[in-house]
Amino acid sequence: MKRLLNNLDETRSCFFLTLLTGVVFSGVCVLAPALSGAMVAAFSESIAAGKRLLILYLLVGACQIAFSLLDAYMSMQFSRRQKQAMRGSAFRAFSKNDFAGREKSAAFISFVNNDIPALTEQYFSGAIDIVKCTFILLFSAISMLTVHWLLALIVFSVSGLMLLCPRAMRKKSGAARAAYSESLGRYNAGLQSFLGGLQIIKSYNYHARANEIQEEANAHASKKERTLNLCQMRVHGMTALLQVGKTLLILTVGVALISIGQMEAGGLIAVVQLAQLIAAPAEVLARMLHARSEALPLLKRYEEMLADGACEAASFQMPDKIKTITVTDVGCSVDGLRILGGASAAFEAGKHYLLMGESGSGKSTLLRLIAQIGELGYSGEIACNGKCLKEISAPAYYKRVCPVFQEPYLFSATLEENILLGRDIPAEIYSSVIKKLGLEYLIERYRGQEITPEISEQLSGGERQKVALARAMVGKPDVYLLDEVTSALDGGSAEAIEELLLHEDAMTIHVCHKPNLRLLPLYDVRLVMQNGRLSVV
Image 1 (spheres, rainbow, N blue to C red):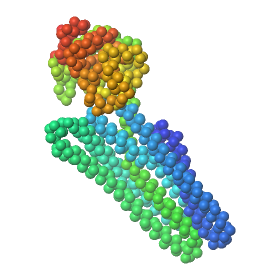
Image 2 (cartoon, one colour; image 1 turned 30 degrees about the horizontal axis):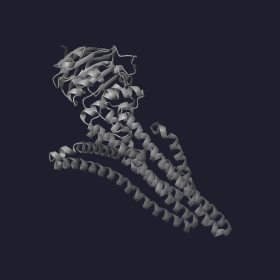
Image 3 (cartoon, helix red, strand yellow; image 1 turned 45 degrees about the vertical axis):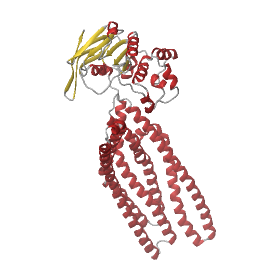
């Protein structure tokens, strides 16, 4: 129960209101058949007494209709709100990652679109259904005991066996659900990959092989879904067999009790109706318990996702100004290949640094490590104002440091949103930066429009780089970390923007493969990366 409540959070009040509605509806559902048996018995004795019970029966029927609609409405409301809350929580947690590969992103999308709806229905809404079914069984037990204890014992013995069926499949069903979710994630990763490269598929006649690879993933997902369905069918088959056996046993014993005068026909009618009423919740309860067990791996994954997003190892806050960034004997390897081998440097506030070197020498890797982007581990230490970066709060660090990389990314939002990113930037600063970078025409052309992937492809590489630079410049950071940020611009524009950046009142660390000779004197320090180490030139 505690685990359930912890994961409700924003929808807790809606959950309990839906639960209360369901319990009242369960009571009304049991009252109707109980009254029917009493009404038949009353009519056999007195028409007046029968009429009174008939009126009461009709009123209960009207209540049953009203609460049926209210119960359905509340259940849909809760399900909708819970899915909305979980999607929001999952994105907030996942978005704290600074890097997610294609496969990891596809798995997350699959989880949001497929697993969160399943988890909501099977675990959270399922909890309400389990309580409702339990109350129907409890109310029915009380009603049946007033008719005959033996029939009540038969009904609830068989119902108890039905509830035990899911436990027999609990472990296997949970594993089947997890395997299906994983295979669906792999399918989505492949789908995303191929859809992103349609031009290459067409240009290289790759259609047949791409279809073959994706169909293999599709077949694998279908196979895992079949295993999951088989687990569900086994539970369904066992409960159906018990249902038929229960009905036959009730009728046989009921007829025998009437023949020896221990029960009236009206009592048997009530018991049969109550048994039919119990049949549905007992079967649903068995199915819900099975589904709840099946959903536990998804809940565990959701909880781990939220825990990862909530993890904040660093708590140190940045001072008002970044004065120094120091790199001390930093080493880094990827898959056994050494990229950096003892790189050291000291960067001071307000100075401009040019970082040169051959392709693959480790320049960009060092910049990413300083930017704290990606999942690369390293030895040595990178410190800001003498404090290790790993101990500094990420939100505080990025208020002072702006990384800009060669391949800019644009969100599906307006250009203004892509530049401001929700920050409260004064209008005069925004306008000044737009003017300095010559982006007025682009802002005017797409004013108010969402930059879809199709529109983004229409923008030149240089235009996208200018938008990324504007994004950094409007924040007036203490430090610019630049990686080939003018590579897509023509010579004149690239030179003008690089010079503009060198006149910013900030520390600048610029990774450049082919430096502009005219601008070299504007750099305070020029560094060269060779064999994973830095040296001043």
